[in-house]
Image 1 (cartoon, rainbow, N blue to C red):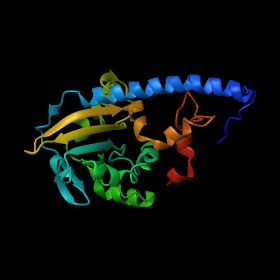
Image 2: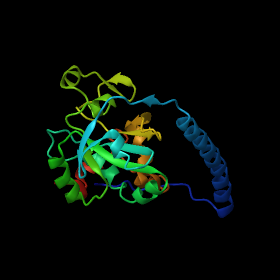
Image 3: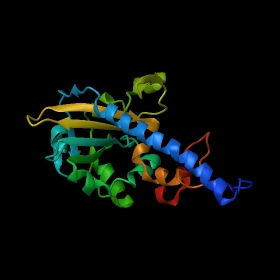
Length: 239
């Protein structure tokens, strides 16, 4: 992949650089405060109770949604694009998944369990997971409606029409499965509540590499018309 070469970028004396940097710092601090406020608003969203029974197949056998919490009160689910008719998981979801093993111990310490969910059967998931060297828990939602109910998968007739409910709007999601994350809470009596879901660019917050790249001069260095096209050719994500 060819990388952009930076040329003719402004170069100034230190005093001018410092003035520009402190001006940006004021905007960064305002953004941090705005982000803190947004996070508070996210946590303050009303919940919806999950009464439907979902059954998952994973390394610990068959488990319900409540059992996926693993004794904790909060659960983050990453909707990993891996439908049953694919031979391997999505390359773009794989880029995201490269960030999921490290935080696990810290999430657990803060009463949070993380799990990835796909519609592919466990017999397809586990060999791919081993190939990629991941340790996080990954379960199959098949044949339940879980991914469909949480807007990460779409029925064949929806795909044929090109109209699906994705990211809270009717749109053409382009395929049978899309990326997303859903969050759940379980109260002391065992009741489960859906608290939040995000999709598309909403999952950028889960990708630590992007946060590093946003600091450097070239940024994410992606084609604005075809974001992440480079992932398709990355050696790590080739079969």
